[in-house]
Amino acid sequence: MPLFIQLTLTGLTNGAILALAALGFVLIYKSSDVINFAQGEFLLIGAYVIFGLVAQFGVAWPLGMILTVLIAVALGIAVERLVLRPMIGEPIISVIMVTIGLASLLKAIVGAIWGTIPQAFPAFIPSAPVKILGASVGEDRLWAFVIAIAMLGLFNIFFTRSREGIAMRAVADDQQAALSMGISVKRIFAWAWSIAAVTASLGGMLVANIVGVSGELAGFGLRVFPVVILGGLDSIPGAIIGGIIIGLLESYTGGYIGEGLNQVLPFVVLIVILMVRPYGLFGQEIIERV
Image 1 (cartoon, helix red, strand yellow):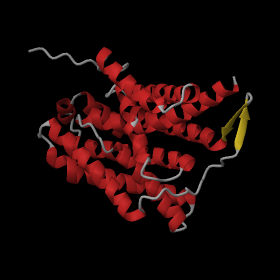
Image 2: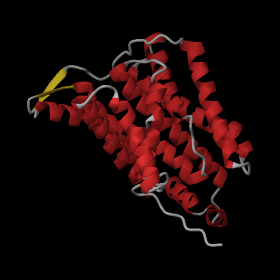
Image 3: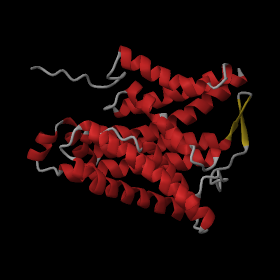
Image 4: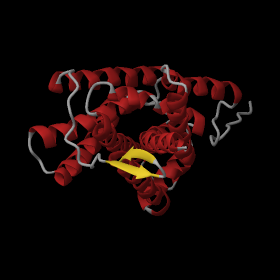
């Protein structure tokens, strides 16, 4: 029983962080129909930027987090304006290849600035073990789960209550109708990429606080793909639920079976979902009549 509780809490933590990163992926797809293969590198940059500010330049944690978010916003806007906007109207495969190239470029920039050797992260969340129903869980994981859920809640309020959030939902549903209502689609695209960079950066901070900083963090971003395929490429609630499901599956498989199967299982789920329900659990099935 203690092992089950420990694995459950670990899975929930990982799932909440995955959901946070997947949220940005879904936003970009919903608003612009672009599949962003650089989402993992956004997460990597967020982790290394906060590491550089706090560990190398001695910036206080609160200020470092604010600066990291601002840098993420600037990165999202720059990518949308300089890389993706010129690709409007191009074949979808061309846009996908651009995001793959962007992922390689961002990873190379991180390697050139900080190197490729893993480094200890200056923890901003205590990591002392906490006993819960006989299971021992790191305090940092519990806080990471709470912070990730709080961020997801704030973003949900933004999408449902704020003017910009409602405009983003309108563009996601019908770009032509949104244009006719005076909504700037290009501005919404910039918002989507900025939020995607911010959510990934926040996820990067939380993951790095637990495992440290290294190029392997970009691999954590790759696990976003099974999450969004499972939940639905165009579903924000699906990204949250998909993240929790994948996080728990990874944790249970790693704890009870091991042998590296926890790294493979999410992609097995991805293949099965694509075969059985290509639009995901909560994705919208699009029917085209000709």
